[in-house]
Length: 230
Image 1 (cartoon, helix red, strand yellow):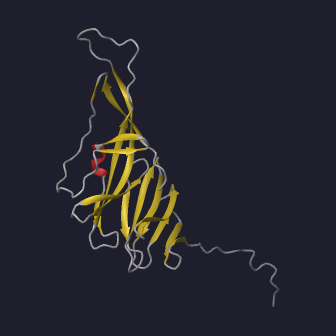
Image 2: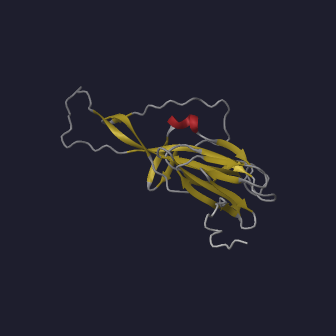
């Protein structure tokens, strides 16, 4: 999946004491897996950001070759830049601390959890997204194989990164990855799944085991040039 680009937001922090304001609605039903409170990425320790709670994904589907269902979640984690204290800090007693805006970098993650022998769910794989929460579609590609996961991760104003993973030989293998600024549609018809990016159609080729772009028939006006008249 294409490397993520963090969303930059600004929060109000007071010198010495920081606070974050974010609203999140409580879950109506307790999920079997929750987003981690902290996650390490790119050498930084990120903290779960509840501001995107309403756009998170939670789905259960059998994605591998065992009989138990796996769980897929998405979430945003944030990194707040550290404040550099001024050389001459105001140490006047009872003075009102100066306030400033510090940037917050948000990172998008998708995670797959698998049930272990202890009947509890454990992290199996973490995927990175783009700028903000996207969507996940689970589709069957062919009989006798686990379904595939299609991640559509938005970035910027119109860009979307489309990536397909499927469980094969003990791990999740990437079968497709394309970026587009056009509309993305996914057709889940059994036996003929398709990914449509604008006018480009990518159909599952069972023989070649990948999504293959379908050529659009074009009329060649020069095809009949030079043909002798009968």
